[in-house]
Image (cartoon, rainbow, N blue to C red; front, top):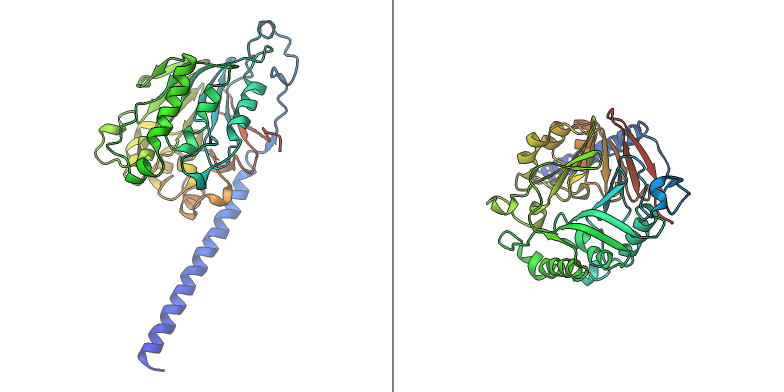
Length: 353
């Protein structure tokens, strides 16, 4: 065997060893993920006590307002997209909207998800009169899987929004394809137009200071993204929401990533949390070791299928932060109920299958 053949054989053996190691590590992380899931059993959501599900028998129910069911974060199943409903003290607010049906990228269109969201709002957040009032909506950024459903939701006559947090869109730090192919400018205009048609107040500058929402305290992060010369792309403009409720903390991380250092920059400011809505659907370059070492979340919610979490992210969640991860797709939506002592209870199957 000449030197060339020996070198080829060695390279083949090394490559096979690397592939086997990657496969073995992936199997190990999957097994650990399954083990961690057992810490938080996901039980069936019954919607008992919600206006569309039962007679609430309260004074608040009699005047057509939604009754409070505690402090909850509803992670809706809108495929690989974000749509999150906050609930506290009988008040409701919405972070992102999931897909709409008119994506400028025709190959990436999803039909019917905005109606799924509307139906869910009327089941959970409406009073006996069928009317929904949201304290606010927040569009974290203008990618269609986060903003696409807003126009249909805002135009529903049974839904009222007190404040629309819709940042002005600046194209100075966007990728060219986001402007030309993804048409984020038209997505932004459409959401703003829908809010204006209904006469809903629009705030282009969400509050930088913490504010009360029922029993929760909310704080918006990364509001200075347009001023950061290192940031590039609309994901880097994502507004994050930090929730404090008694002794429990949760972070809704939108499409944050560490591609340009965003996670590393924000991690010290955020500190430990009990629950993390995974950054950027669990894709590569997100949920970095540095972020997860700082946050150490007990529970992670991914707005995607478990199989779509990238191997490096899966490794970080299992080996670095030892996080129990749950999928909105697998569980058909997840409600996280926050208790004052830091406990978290999970229920699933939020939508008709």
